[in-house]
Image 1 (cartoon, one colour):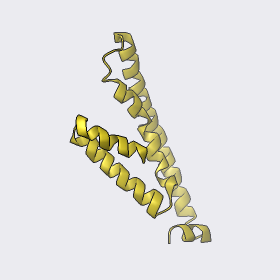
Image 2 (cartoon, one colour):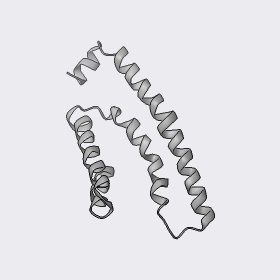
Image 3 (cartoon, one colour):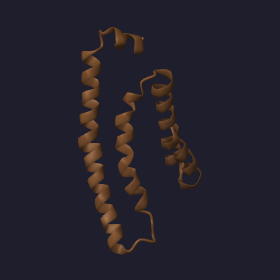
Image 4 (cartoon, rainbow, N blue to C red):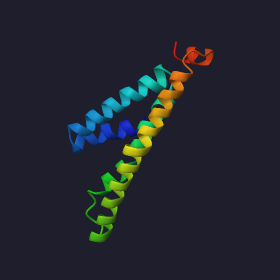
Length: 112
């Protein structure tokens, strides 16, 4: 939930898009972690945000040109790896396991 709070704080200086992202991230986290007691549903989304580290560093103006280019390449690589490859794979596994286990007592006690 700290990630959402940081976005909300940055929204004051960086624009409404950061504030909205933080607001909706916080609402989703509260819903799945606190109300549904199912933090495993949020894990793929949090992993997807790893590429944001390099995206934030793109704005840094103190890097030499070569470091900035390497950072941009890393952002593209991590974006592809986490958002295009790993996230769909994890989410597919999550949905598949939840579907397969939906009639078990453990699943029923968690999501009833």
